[in-house]
Length: 531
View 1 (spheres, one colour):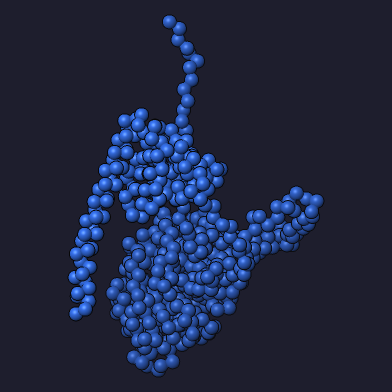
View 2: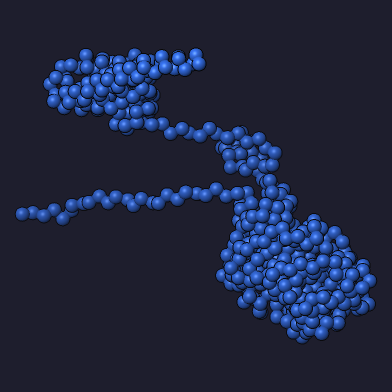
């Protein structure tokens, strides 16, 4: 007995699972456009991040006893300031971007010249570690600060004099200046309160304008751009307060699992490509759970959530909306850069200056002419710009099998395909189409025994239904008349006809009973109508 060693077996390919793509909103696409770089390891936990308000919007990071200033174009360190005796806790640029103030655990505040990369002044007045330092939005001569001595101070920078505000009963860990009034600022403390101050008032008691209870130790507080709303972070919640409305709580967002450590306000859509949400503001929050959340406070909705591998301590967003920076507890600095045409040009310019050949110009693109093959394919991959009128292609309609056969004039095959699909609406529609083409009786006469059985089974089941009766009763009569020989020679077909006859007889009996009932009710209704 011979065995065939060359016998082959066909292997069916594995079917790939089809995943349904979820449609992303324009804002989700905006946040996904930030390309994350490799995290830059710094010495220790990154306690604060701050962007310069002036172009090119470099940013500063405080870690250990150091403040490092990074380039917003190359994302590389430009300068490092190590003038602290203890850990640097906070940093803030002046409104013109020329000076940088930073607090530290040594209770001192250092003022640095950003261009000269050298310290200018040292402010001493706190008795415990300083945890927040902030400049007013436009005032270049004053400074706000707060620390573990539970005191908030208002400094005149050049003279070194200060005014103290007491009212907190625990560590003051955060604060922010009003965006509309340089004399007002807010502070948050571990005593669960957020307090609003007006430095124009002469006494300490009158300077305290408003106080609200967050319900947990306050880790950060920021003014929203209108100046009438303030967001505070404490515990696992972020709360929004109406300052003009007397400190009314507008909303509480509890989307983090652990303590929220830092907040910042992000302005999105400056480059004009962000669609309907351009030039709007969002609250960004980071937490020890490793999540960065983006909150649209106009709709009271979280619009984006990003997971990082470590606990997060700080976050900042550039004023031009091109760079997002997040600092972690182990010293990793996560930078997300949004690619824009301005960023590309500025990077080329900086690299050209570094090499020594000036700005690098792009080679001129070849002009497309009708003699080029690419001329006839131009614009196929172009994306629409703002204001373009987009003409959408009509969606391709997927035809059923019987529709495809009708388009090819395969009439009998179309009728059989509709009968096998067992959808009465489609079957009757195909029959009506064949009647309009005067092909229905010809199709019936050409049906085989099995196909005729399908038709008789359909007629027996649906002929007595009122919505199909007008077409199917007439067709049933024609089928029996034209195919009487085939029916008489098959017991199966005889059974279909007997069932059809029984169904029709039952329907006639029901109709007669209904007519009798109608005859009894009609006189009663007429008598009732006269009364």
